[in-house]
Length: 205
Image (cartoon, rainbow, N blue to C red; front, side):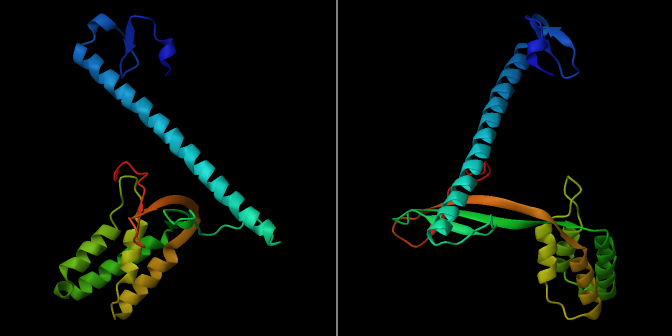
């Protein structure tokens, strides 16, 4: 609901009710102000990142198109992983595509088979394996199973026919639902051949 609909001298509370400002505590007003300022700044940053990604993808696509024209090759909008760099090698930009994976109802069958293996092994199954299995089949807050955890499970080499059957069920449950494109920017560390990512994630800046 827009603030423009709020009469002067009033504030809207979380229930949608209009409250006279002189009835709102100073601490509540201060909290409202700080939260609103941070939210506005976050929205501006989000828009800037969106525009940066759009420009980056456009610029890389143009560069590929120019290279194709120069050599008489029709690129045809081909999607692929590309790395470009400055002439002095100080910066690199990577465009990469990754499949988005989801899981079909067969994951429920796989879950039963995996736990059947664990029960059959009883004390023979170490706690590390149990922790991995529990993590794989524990959905996140959105009710989704984490793809990386499933791939970790598939990497385990266990010579057991029932386990192999369970892993086949896991593989059969994986479905590609689309692809995501990423732009990553790197800066060379000094004069070395190593690069560090320029963080575009709040968790690592």
